[in-house]
Length: 165
Image 1: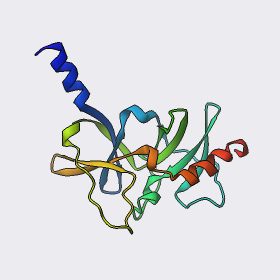
Image 2: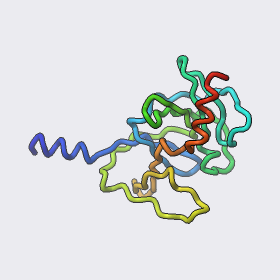
Image 3: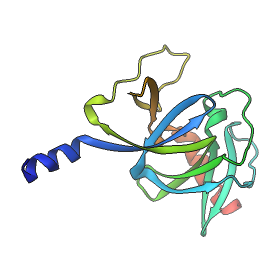
């Protein structure tokens, strides 16, 4: 195999950090992951959506933290020893946010052509944060677009609160 063929193959592969929410598996682009931290209490904010847990001081940067279990309506969630916060780069890479998940699983390498488009589930079920779905070992992994987890309006409000934390 030539070097060009190897380069082409590596360009068609993407890596995702996989994590669990309840009984479901999800993945986020590994290039967006900045850090994985054990769950720790955050500074709560008032008048924000329920899934916004608060703000976290990450080495001098104040970042919003959202609980994906609440955001994705996972029932009976509780904070356990395996609960972690994944710090993700968002938007222009200068912004970050934390997402609370039940546990981190693995790094998954996927061919770009294996990623299937998320089905349209109607206007009542939001799937705009879903980048795609991939089948792995008879299970489906939903690939999440971290840039779309917080709507623009909520992210702007939280960005303005950075000086408050």
